[in-house]
Length: 545
Figure 1 (tube, rainbow, N blue to C red):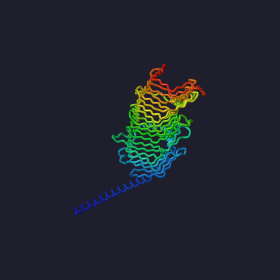
Figure 2: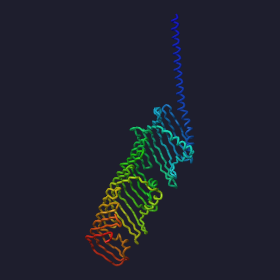
Figure 3: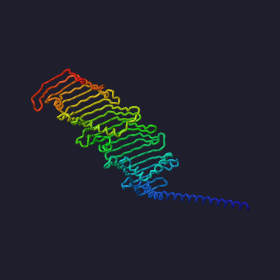
Figure 4: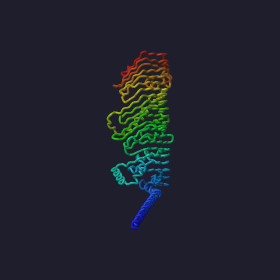
């Protein structure tokens, strides 16, 4: 009986322990459920409610902006945050930034490893206003400084410098259908406005700490009307490294004129620019920048020397530059072939002997000398080279007001071919030039020259050049009027400017056919002949003989 009673007590004891365990598990499950419920309530309801009210307050305190957000959602289980219909106005009541939708998805596994990781950041149709102020400040930086005391800003900066930068990881960042309004107040007067739309960006696999063989991939596309910027490649933040391709297509003359106004002394009237290049840059002990495979195309260029000119002084159909390369560390620039099609150049000299192009360049040089600082000694000299230049279908018009009667000379069908040019200015450069005069006749020259010290060697020839075209210059030197006559010549010209003064010799043949001269004012015939031929003829420049 005693044994049976002991056995019953053991069974009862086991049942009590089992009931206690089941109650404990149930209580734990209930507690866990309650915690999950509270966590879900805090994530789904409390946090969005707090953000909807806190975000405008923080922007008001930190930036001085009046902000609104229509709705904020947070999923505490997927760590994703979404916001809809955000907008903000600055202290002047002007819209400064807005977006239709924002989605941020945190990576919980990366947080366990001490990394702030974002699986996705997606911004849909942001609308941003960026102002370049008159003192070259940015409106965002101005608003921040206005809303934050200088002492607090300095303290925060020192605190940030003491700690190590956080480890951030961005798996995918996307800007979809953005719009950027850029306003430039830096040049005074009414601001120039540029609206970039659409603005699309894609960035993948970006980290703020060094990783072996893992560079981020990025792609940017922005359009300003028909002007398009395309930029793609790879990026590393630590160490700083980027390589890729940049293409600017269809840039209009008015856009370029605005940004080049402080540096360009002339007026851009027309033209579009397309530029593309591959690049590679790296930061470290020494900043490195290398560009390669660059191409530049300028279409329908029209340039005037001043705003008062009715007609452009320079116009071209096409300028194409191929094979552009640059190496900052090696201090070297290379250019392939330069092709210029149908250029038209107008130049004039006023009664005081001042050439308009020279005067405009002299003015630009004076302005730059007043503001620029002397260049520092950079050691190794800069090296450059150009493979060659080809010019076709050119026109030149020269008007000279120095003579008593204005001289007006036109050159048509100008063609120029030049060989390689480089920083080695003492090396010879080959050339081939041909042109037709507007009044009749043709001139050709072929040979080589050296830029510095200047030397010139060439075979020159001319045929059927009408002499009356130089009548304004003859009238200043002699009481004579050229009525008719045609000049022809064929020979070699050598010039040498290694020592002052310039010396040179022409040797060859020359002839003047159908010459007719008379006294000015419809005077009688003075000298005429059918043909005068000099073979050979030699002319020495200095001393003249």
